[in-house]
Image (cartoon, rainbow, N blue to C red):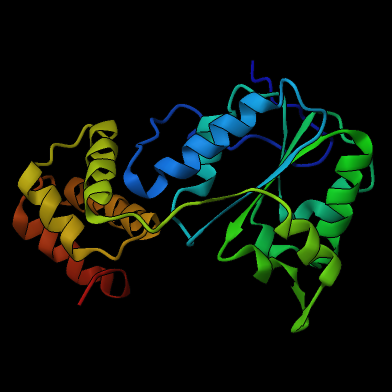
Length: 234
């Protein structure tokens, strides 16, 4: 049974990521190392906070799941902040994903203050630079900006071609689909550098191979890439 605490709210550790293998690469290695060090420091610290930022679909949630999967924690998306703040926290660690999507950034200020008052450590993860999370109606929230600036920051870069290839091969193997190294290189060279593009491509390729009842070859790969349009590199 998972050690993640369940509230009456819709609060869970992402189940779809729990049993997958995290692929470490130069673009995420520093962030991963910092998060593991920070996690280990929780044993001797009453309350800490840390930020995780990176481009959309760069693997932030995946990395958090890998680092904190065995930690007693409350997992929420920032759009649930108001409901979560209405009750005491029931775990020593709070992990907030999509911090840049908070309905009102001032809720992040309340969250940080509540965590410190209750002795709860917290992780805030979101897309882009954390200072942009502290803007409401085009106006910077100075109190929130001050709080965020004081926290350590782990940064994930966009996946490079080699990481795209390695993740693609891992996903294909999980689907019991055979893909040659040469084709994996070709695909990674033509997709935009994001796991969102890679996810869409993998699902489409799997569906096309099943519908046509054929093995994956260059012709099928080219057909799927042509159909993806905006997710491919020109």
